[in-house]
Image (tube, rainbow, N blue to C red; front, side, top):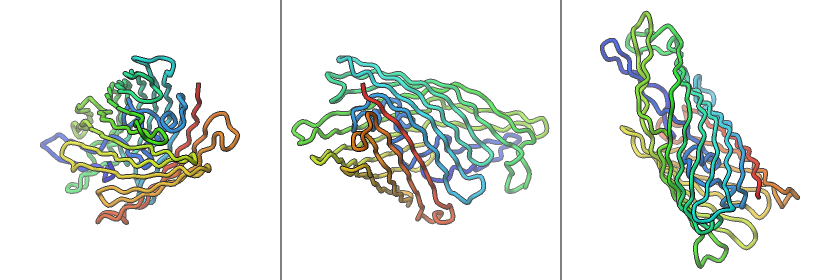
Length: 319
């Protein structure tokens, strides 16, 4: 969710409870759609017909602020296009995120099934992710505002298992001139809600509270005779005790290699994005896509937060 992921600290007796947004956000979330919803089909599959995708992302949020979030992901996915009725798809992603004194590194594998008459034209997908996550806390860098004291003296980490669940529907629209595609999905990428308790020999214990995030998305691929397409989309995010958040976006793939996009969020953040798609138009058998996204906040917190930059690179292949 676009908003503060810094850590409010609550002091209760001798126990410290830390609560924060634990999952990263993305400007070009359609390029990391499998991390948002494990059942979602990649843009490479829906727009270009390629059923194998590998990619990576680097995101630097609030550039210029000490301890601002940085996120890196590596991902891969495969859709079996040879079966009808129920067909399988699989993949996984590695994600590393650091926000000030806290961070995590997680690896997830996924497997899912699509109920479909023809996987290339539509279906209902359900997928499950499973993985392990290392959560890190540099306790010596977290200070209580009132006491101007650290919550601990020992930097610590814990490993824990995690699961994610997603449902996703996509369908070629009958009667559309160029086989336009509608899609929608809902997901809980972090199912386990738990408290990670860290022990410190001098200051006692403190707890990291992890809560479920619920994501919803929908969009449309509007294809044109010239080979380009328009994609409006919506991403809604909900976390308990936090206002519902929504991003509205639109991007246009020109008939040439260039694509451009823009969007905004209800918290006052606006973004622009651009990139290149190099495939048949460049004489390639496969598809290489490079994208850049830029965020800026116009909210009351906004300009002091700094700008955000995101780079995505992906390569996709067809059968």
